[in-house]
Structures are given as C-alpha cells and as structure tokens.
Image (cartoon, rainbow, N blue to C red; front, side):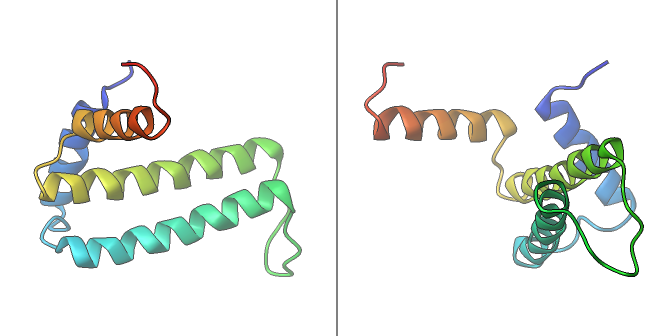
Length: 109
C-alpha cells in the first residue's frame, strides 16, 4: 500500500527522531541533502554515461534503476525533513510549485 507524501513525511520524521537525527538544524541538513544530490548525480551518470571505475563491478539495468530510486528517495526525505522543520507541509510544497509555474507561464488554475 502506497503512503501519501504527508504520511511518509510523518514516518520519516518519526524515524529520524527515534535515531536522534532530527536534532540537526536545517543548515546542517542542507549539507546532508547536498551529499544525497551528489549520490543522485552518480546514479544518473551511471545510467546515462556508464561507469569505468576499477573498484566497482558492472551493475545490471535493474540495479541501476534501483539505485536511482533509492537516491531520489534519499533526496526527497531530506527535503521533507527540512520543510517539516519550517512548518511546511508536502501539500504546501506541491501547491507552491504549481502556483509558481502557473503564474510564470500564465496558465489557468
């Protein structure tokens, strides 16, 4: 069963609190997000360009896709936790994204 973004945010915040990871400020958490974006970059580069690293084994397409989903999820989790620390809900983020683009490109609601 799939969770909503809000349900997942609540789950990840609780998980982080239980591991004492929630205590880190948004500024520190932004560093964690930067690290995850770097890992996402590597996952996408592996799919798009391949990897030629002597310390790594070749990955199957399924392994590459799994790693991509994993890294995208890690980035999403960091963003959800940062937003929670500022009292911003996932629904607020979605609405803000759509509102900005509709206004920028003069699209109807």
